[in-house]
Length: 372
Image 1 (cartoon, rainbow, N blue to C red):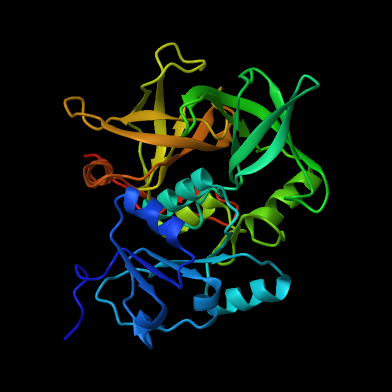
Image 2: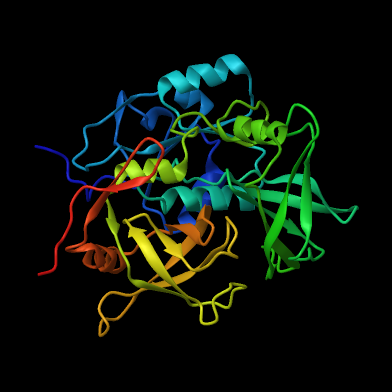
């Protein structure tokens, strides 16, 4: 009899007592967890639906996973360790481990990392933000400010600091030798700064900086970190399509349609449109290209309302600017869609002409609807 997917845990932990802090965080996140330790780990173990977390010892002596009734790619595999050397990384890559996490990663960064894995969609590894939790200096107008680098991606990074960073500023995030082979600066405009509270309740400023126009040397360092080639990082990706553009990957995985509907920004933004209204060019389940918001910079996250018929309610969802698509256009990537949002986007595409991409990413119409 085939196993039932409802009986398979969302998360499986395999360890000998080393993963108690991770177990505690996952329980507080409300995850469906099964934890096996020591002699309870047999020759085969249940295949989790979403996430497999193993200590380094249990990784190197990994039992087989039982057959699963669930469809999909299988779980993301995270190995937790207290050592780091190149031969070990290559061995873990060969075993199929996706992420290598050092047990010195601070608790809040670890919580964000696990939360992101649990709530990721099919493109989870290609759209991932590394939760690094390392101390950096942020230089604004020549003045260094101590901060913690909490998230890093191909397009942006987020830092936490006790002092506010001006949203009109250009910030230089100085990475020390603890995260790079040599001191390097990641420079870019500040997208937004939000006053929030730390886990202890103390006030802290969360600042997002765009990294879309880095110098070649800085871009090379960033790519080395994001592809797991940099030794000593607290979180290191070991498998996945990390060298590939997110938008290019999404373009191949999901059909795009010619969509000329109205798109509204539901937040006040510095755009050249008086009413925050733009018009779509093409639409898929992962994103949309819009004309009318030329001032929006990559990395900006906001709420969009996508309209179909004049009497229909719009589809409201969160989206992030991923690139400039032209002089007056920007490309958005949608956040995780709920079932109702996904159905809403699918409804918007019913009957629309579909698009294919040439090698230079220019669209060509391959079907056409003729009004009679």
